[in-house]
Amino acid sequence: MPRTTILVMIDGLDPEYLAACPAPNLRRFAAEGFHVSGAGMMPSVTNVNNTSMVTGHYPAQHGIVSNYWLDREAGIEQYVESGEFICADTIFAQCQRSGGRSLLAASKDKLRRLLGTDTDLAFSAEQPTPEAVAAAGEPPHVYSLEVNGWTIEAARAALQAAHYDLAFIATTDYAMHAYGPQHPESARHLAILDAALGRLAADVPDAQLLITADHGMSDKRRMLHLPEILARKGIAAQAVPIIKDQYVVHHSNLGGCIYVHLEDPAAADDAIGVLRETDGVEEALPRHQAARRFSLMGERIGDILVTGAADVVFGDPAEVALPPGLRSHGSAHEMGVPIIGYGGDFGGFEFRENRDLGRYVSQRVLN
Ligand SMILES: [Zn+2]
Image 1 (spheres, rainbow, N blue to C red):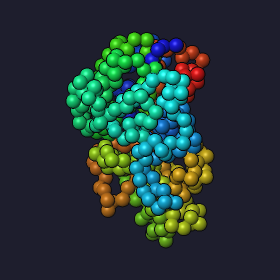
Image 2: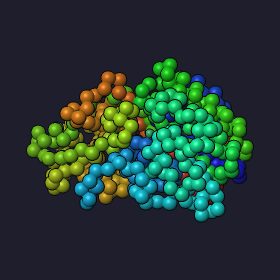
Image 3: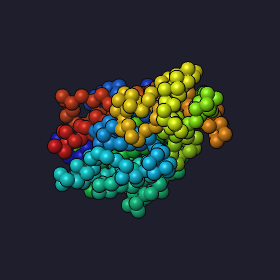
Image 4: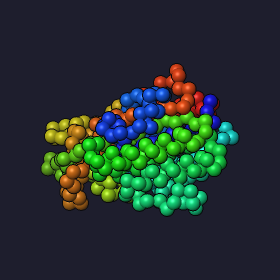
């Protein structure tokens, strides 16, 4: 077994980017190791999928079902940015119990805050350590194409400076929200990532790499405001955006999946009838069905889970105008992710979902 296992989560790496952009190192990893078309978790947003990767579990077990949630019991809305919300054991905690050391390097600080518990070293490009700055320079802005290169370089430096048994590197999807696969800036972003990953593989001796994404990315051209549609039929409802986080420049908090909370839960059947008739709504599922279908923790989701057609996002025009050229995620159309493994003995282990990276670490590395 290699001495260091490195999981790389390339945020928003839709398979289309790999198909369209030159990425010689990723192609070499795939050719010498393996490459499969995998699936992510629903809702296809960052926190849900990253938590599945570091626990190996579905959201029904780990409890992270959105980036943002309405806690109906407490009557408050809040960002899901703390490890306290995670109900399952992480690979970092398992690593610690087995006497190993782990590292988390993220572009976005929200992932350090959510996942960093029980790591031996955790930093982000927004909250770097002095050592990371000394090794990789001042981090570029979190809304830049260069920030992900910094995060991988800083992780490489940390892995060269001290031994870690496990590392989790998480980039940000600013570039994918901003540019489609055919845009020259996407080729430049992929080249930055690819070069940094090539150096990582070359310079960390005896490492195995597993690379995947949390979700894909689609062009979004239509916006639906579901509370207004329901209000026209006399149903009072609140829509809580699953994608919402503090990186508004990325997506204006507009995503392809939303939790609807009804003022009167007894109106659920009527509301679902209205939503299913609405053009652009792909699925409207009552809580228990949504929880079963997508393996979600039922008590943390809305009365109704609504998913959009490929080009649809959910939002309130009183709060936000649909930006021209919006690219976003959250729906079932952004669940496809690549899974690439390199440098390890992956024989006999089936990688089908991004959460399998965590499962592999639990079952094969730390066991
Ligand atoms: Zn993401």
